[in-house]
Image (cartoon, rainbow, N blue to C red):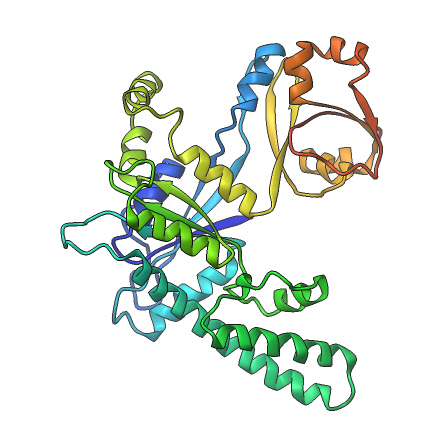
Length: 357
């Protein structure tokens, strides 16, 4: 699954992408009109539970879960329809969106996050309007034959158009039924995608206390999105330091960890993912799993053979390990659970899968 990073020119989105993924992107390949290709990179998700597990289960290596970010080329004012269409096509392919909003003065003296967000939202709402209007026309024609599915689509699309015509993203409506969500998913609407608004602040506003940062947070809350505060410039500097210097710099700033950690974890949650763990002397590892997934699906994320031959899963929580110190003590305390195929995985489960192929 992918999280797309979008933002107006000068918002700092590529700087943030580089800090998250360790890339050195400075521009976009294929510079012809409408031919810009996104930068793609992988970010390790900082996870404080991994070293905690390794503290009690000595291991040779620790492996973090990862998330894939896509730095989508923006469209400068006057960029033209071809570049706009290319931008929209890229946004449609990702599973969630991180919208970077400039909350620092770039020397122009103008900081207007509300206007920047509105500029981006307007383009996305218009794009969805065009899709929904065309889809409604087609569904209306089919519904005249008495087709029940088409009638359901007409009702759903009429609700969508009402929302969009009011200038609101589809995700701002929280009352969609599962049937309606499946219908909407089939049209690839952009504004139904989960969005994380990233307030990109100055180094003097790391806690997001400025009016600009608060405006981003308030907009996210009002439109069904989430928000985080990040100083992309600082994150890029931290990413270039070795571990010792990074820790020293964070301490001098009064920070527990780089803001990349909360951002990556928020993006992972935005994608509907949680983490479970496997632990042994070879490795302690975090595995991403769809929230609500059953145990065999989790087994399959490790290897298809484990899912196919799934027998049961022996599970305990990270907090159980922290309290009892060893797996042996967890078992003796009756905290080690034996779960079957119908077990719904929980974030923070530590698992041993038993299988036979």
